[in-house]
Amino acid sequence: MPLIQRNIIEEARLLSRQFRALTIVGPRQSGKTTLSKLLLGNKPYVNLENPNTQSKAEEDIEAFLKQFPEGAILDEVQRVPDIFRYLQELLDNNKARGQFILTGSNNFLLQEQISQSLAGRTGYLQLLPLSYSELYAANLSYDNINKHILTGGYPEIWDHQLMPDKWMASYIQTYVQRDVRFVRNITNLGDFNRFILLCANRAGQLINREEIARSIGVDTKTIQAWLSVLESSYIIYLLQPWYNNLNKRIIKTPKLFFYDTGLLCYLLGISTQSALEKHSLYGNIFENWIITEIKKNRFNAGINGGLYFFRDSTGNEIDLLLEKEGNTIAIEIKSAKKIDSGMLSGLRYWKKNNLNSQGILIYGGEKNEEISEGMQVVSWKDVTEI
Image (cartoon, rainbow, N blue to C red; front, side):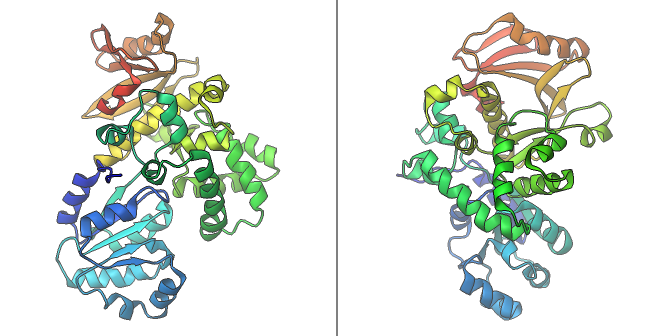
């Protein structure tokens, strides 16, 4: 099967020309190594997750890096945290652009090291699993959104036509046994596995840390720490609420979403289209897929942030507020294949109070339609245009 073109490639090339190094982060198996070799395929590739390589690097980092006078691809670089201080000096002594690519599957550890040692020296990109846009361009997309929801976007599944649920079972087992223990010393992996399942059952909902803590029998500080683990390793993300007062965005309750709906469906025990359509959380899963596709498209363009939801004390709600080119676009998401006027109530409320804001309803049907000036209905297939 031909290599699927990644939409992030142009942004990656641009940053490689701007910075002395490029850092690419994202979940395991999202294609970071493939992208890195595409960018710097003429340079040595070093996997620091290999125990022998990691041991040699830690033994004498300076000597280790001297092997690569022209630069290299350093994969899973967070495994050797001290390497960043040596890279700082090396990059300061050589002003050439695009010397190194650093990759990692833990955002928190990498950001911490970059802010301390490599600020201003490295570009920064987040690579998520394949987007619908990328699959469509490669003539691999389906006309049925439920197939996309169930399959998710991990490249290996698409490259080799693997069974998603079998692949996800191995992915989760490896993730818990390897990454979770590396990031944080979690002694009771059984409780942590229950926590992941509880998160799956709350996808697309306001997160209630106290209720999750009670369900597992741990304190809320533990739940907060575990949420950070899932966030930093790109299993989940938290969508923050939008308020006119920017400071309030971080103190109100966020919503929980998964980066990959294939993984979400596996955790919920959903393996067929009929089970998906009948599931009580189908609307939430559909919404999760749409919002994550928009997030992927923005990351691929090098845009971080600018995504929120709106909910007021009287129950008025907008699924997604998208800040784009100085404007705020209100987006409602409905899994139904046919439109009824009730679906537009949230948008009408928003438009009444934000006259210049554009309103979009994304739904499970096929046709696009202009409802009124500044308000339109868009098929899920055209999420790539938003």
